[in-house]
Image (cartoon, rainbow, N blue to C red; front, side, top):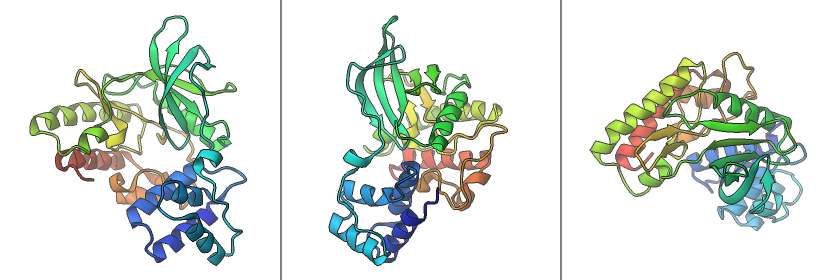
Length: 287
């Protein structure tokens, strides 16, 4: 499906300097990840839902593009995100609480009904298209790479009515949470770099490219262990590209220039760039 309307709207927003360029690129990438077969205006809902533009302003921009008027609904009502109430069972896991949402779905804390083991349960959005579901399958395969500095998968079902991946539950939080409080002390940077590099090396040795290395995808456990997480954009060895020409996959502030030019032609060097950009953010407190 073409991303023409979202792209045209982004171009008009940029021309009128309504949203900073880097932020707009990130929002556009998120809109493309949320696309559905019958809705090519995800960016409009995101701009309103995030409070970046008023519904009336988006209406005006769409009118300038010759597009039907925008109904001012929030992503809460139109987003294809999973709506899984606490206590519901998915596979052998009982949902405990929501941990976070992303472009392809949501992550819940859940408990295995038989063993009572707590996991992070990633669930694909119910209205995700075939391409998103294929990305979910590839993520499950990428997570098969075993290393102490990679988040481990504990089970998955990517072909059932409610596709899910059960991951180890890491208590501690993301590196992004630390960065927002300011630069990391020098004594914390070296173990961060060493462990993150070790995890990335294991991933590359298996032929897998992460393609979205950034502070929010790096977890720091309470015991100090550093883990690379979120393989939703990972490229597996021998796999065909799911990226259309012109699509932007990744996070602009941590993306190598060559990846920004063509997301389908990334190499391990792009991950190294993201690794360096992540360390820079940790050392300075800014991307």
